[in-house]
Length: 480
Image (cartoon, rainbow, N blue to C red; front, side, top):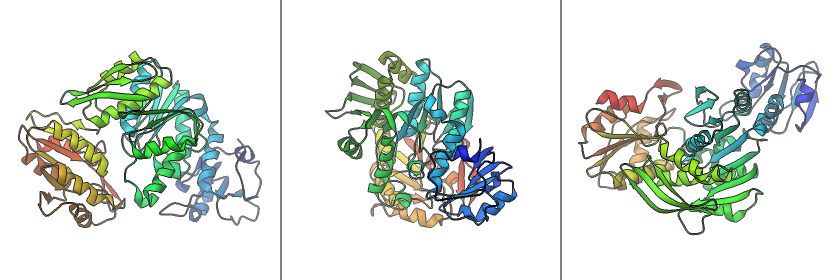
C-alpha cells in the first residue's frame, strides 16, 4: 500500500516529500522500524516520539508522521498531523483493511467486572457454535492461539493486526475489554461495535484522568461507537446517568436488580457452592446458576445474559454456558491445597472491588477473614486509604504488603494504605509479598479464609523499572 493510499481519510496539517512510496508496516516504536515502515511519533507520558525520528530513519523507515514539523527539506516523506494518536488508529485501520467490520464485535468497559464478563461472553458464543476471539487483561485468544496480554487493550496497530489474525484464523466474533486509557488515547478509534457493555464506575486511574467526571466522560466515548446494542448497569449511579443522557443511537438495554431494569435479576443467592438468581427479560425468564461466588458475579452474569440475548443467542444456551463456566484466572480463584486451607486470589485493586470480594467472603467465612494486599506505585494515590478503610471494616486482620511499587518508595505506599485504618490497629506491614502471604497463612485455621488481593492472574512484580517473576498462587502453594 502506498503512503498516499494509507493517508485516505487522515486530516493532515502539512505534507512534504513523495507520498507514492510503498509502506510495508506501521510502527510507533523506533526500535521496530524496518525498511518500508511508517513511523508514527507519539507524545507519550514518559517520552516524546519525535526524539526517535532519526533512529527510525536509520533503521529504514520510509516515512514519518508527527504532530510537529519534520525538517526533511522535502527529501523524505514527512506528514504533520494535529493528533498523532488519532492518526495512528486511522492509519492502522486503513493498513489492515478494517477487519473488525467483518466480525461481530463486543466491547466491555467499566472499572470492575470487564474480564469476567468477557470470559462469560466468550463461553456463551462458543456454546452457540460461534468462534470468538478474546482480547483482555488476562490474555489474548486468536483462533487456537493463546498469547499473554501485555495490556488490557493493545495499541491501535497491534489491535488491528490481531483482528486481522482473528479473521484469518476463522473467527466470526471478537470479545474485548476496552480500558479508559485506550479510549483516551484513541486506540479503538474507527471500530464500530455491535454491542458495548458498561459494568460500573468507581475510583481508579485518577492519576491519569484527574477526576471521576473525566474518567466517566472517557468511558462514555465507547457508546458513540455502537451499531446495535448498549448494555448498561442500571444499578450503578454512573450507569444510570449514561442511560439518562441517551446521547447515542444504539438500542439501550439496562440490567440490574432494581426495578426498571430491562434485564432484571431476582432472588439472588450466593454461598460456598456458587451463586444463583432468577432473570426476567424480553427474551423470557430463566434460572441462572453459577459456580462462581459473589453477588458481583451475578451482575456480571446479567451483563453477559443481556448482551448474548440481544445478539440472538437462545436463552437456554446462555443458561447452560454460564452454568458450566469455571473460575476466571485470578478472579476470586480458590488455591487448592492438601492442608484444607481456604485461600483465594483476586485481582481486586480498587476499594470497590476489594469491598465486593471481602463482602462475599465474609458471608461464607465461619471463622476469621484475613487479607493480604497492597497498592501499585505511580498510580492513583487517593484510593490507597480507601482500600485500607474497606479492609479495616470487613477483614478481621490485614497484612499490608507490596503490589507493584514501580518507582515509588514501598514504605510510603504502605503508610498511605495504613492511613485508612482507625486507631484499632488490626493490621501489620510486611513489605516482602512472599513473606506477607506466608504470614497470612500462619494466621488462619480450617474455619478461616485468607484473601490475597491486588494481582490476581499477574505473574510478576515491578520494582524501579525491573520486572521480577511472582505469582500469588505459586507463593501460596510454596508456603503451604
